[in-house]
Amino acid sequence: MATGKNTKFYETPNHPFQGERIAQEADLLGRYGLKNKEELWRAQSELRNYRREARRLIGEAQGDMEQAEELGVEFLDRLRRYGILSEDDNISEVLGLDVTDILERRLQTVAYRKGLGHTPDQSRQFIVHGHVVVDGARVTRPSKMVEVSEEGLVEFDEGSPLSDELHPERAEGQE
Image (cartoon, rainbow, N blue to C red; front, side, top):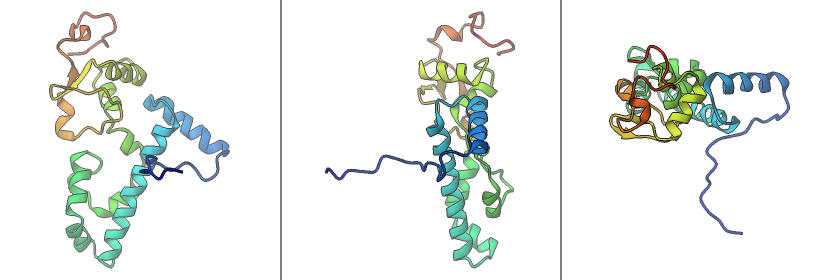
């Protein structure tokens, strides 16, 4: 058996058949236009890693929040850069984050919220088909985490037929 690099970056639920959890997952899949549950589980695993790191930093500082924030300056800066934490949030806020905080920062959701698509699914399709650029660079990965500084730079590619405001698939009210 070949030993290779582990390519699975998420954990599946411990109990596969729980009706309530399955219903919540289905709701999130529909609301955020996710392709499958794997995308949701990846976001949940990312959130789990953030919480684990925050707990580790707080534990290392023995509960002293100021010292924990000094130890985790890069960690907190990254979360603030991606808009997961606001500028005045401290390290204890990481423990109160929800998976929707992660899902809101995906390119697919940002493009939908900006009105590039009528639905999250349509925004996903535009991204995958190469119609969307971030800061002038074409991105075809709907799961790309968008930094706060890049949020205003998400737009249709100039060469795309969708860049024409009169295109029939353009959402109404698009600038």
